[in-house]
Length: 95
Image 1: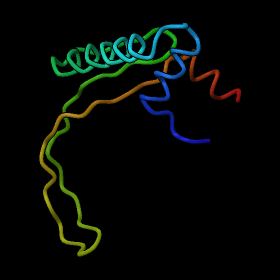
Image 2: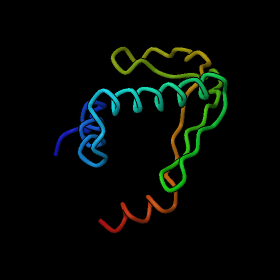
Image 3: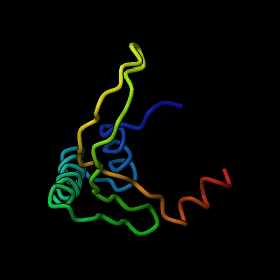
C-alpha cells in the first residue's frame, strides 16, 4: 500500500464524480489553498467526520543534539496539529 498523493486524490475525484481532470485538480487546489489560508491566519479548520487542524505555538525549550549530546536551545515556533474526528478514529480502530 503506497502513499496517497495529491495526484492520486485528483484521480479518485475524477473516478467518483466524472469531472474532468482539470476540474477535479482545480477543485482540490482550491480546497488546499482555503485550508492553508485559514491556518496562516491562525484559524482552526474542521471537517466533520474527518478531523481538525489547529495552529499552536511552541515555547522555546532545551534539547540535545543526538550526535554530540551537546545541549541546545530549540527556538519557539508555530506548528500545525491534526486531531482525528471520533467517527474516523472509530473506523480506523475497527480496521
